[in-house]
Image (spheres, rainbow, N blue to C red):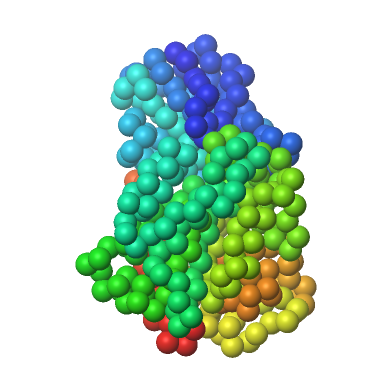
Length: 374
């Protein structure tokens, strides 16, 4: 029996793995950071054996409330992911599972590898409606990919989607895959209408280095990208510096920054109530977008979310606040759960890649609904 994580997005440290019924593990921290919570590893040679895999010291992880009522995901082929029995007690997360094959993968959420990212980019770039630009490099030398969908024009609205500032929030790129797939579907009337009236800019992965390294929240330098949008430094957070530079060129009418939340079992949106120069009309339009998405997708709701920032107290280093402040954009952070959804549960998979992709597709319906007032 062997446990390993030396692959794209992998993260685990083995303390003890001699007896399948007493496997002890630790999660490796993000580089130059105290953040940790993401894990992804493979176990081989344990087919048909009752395994107890204890991930220790998780009470000190970034979001310990995320372990309550949480179930680990597993897969034999890295395509189909299902939930397995998981118990959180006394600071330890224990997986109980009998593998059906000699190769099983466990993860915090279904991974979205950099290889799959490159497949997504290549598939999109093959469409004649799409232009691909490498707008810079990360600290590890990876490309920052920007997709432009449609032809820019003065009479078109400028729409941005960015995702995965926090690399462990892999549901964000599953969401993007669903959204982009629908947007590029020539047979879809919603997509055709949107592209007649809008040009889209999409960054499916804002944090390639953290993604490949198996980080939860930071880039290669240990920087939380969603705190540096006010004054990004090319030496430590080039990802934000390059993307914001492109945004300065295009302007923004509407932007969705896609994330995942460890603790809350809901899909919800956070807005920009705390920016000092708030445009109430734009904020009302953001609220209307939320209402439209709730009508379209039962998986989305507006009752539960983050507390609203006090007037003038919003952190302008955070993307959504900075976009509203800098571009007067209808700017929103969309959050999805690592667990199952409280109101629309599906226990076999919980929140899943397929459900995230479907929400991504639904996001375009809500955009079309508010487009006349954008």
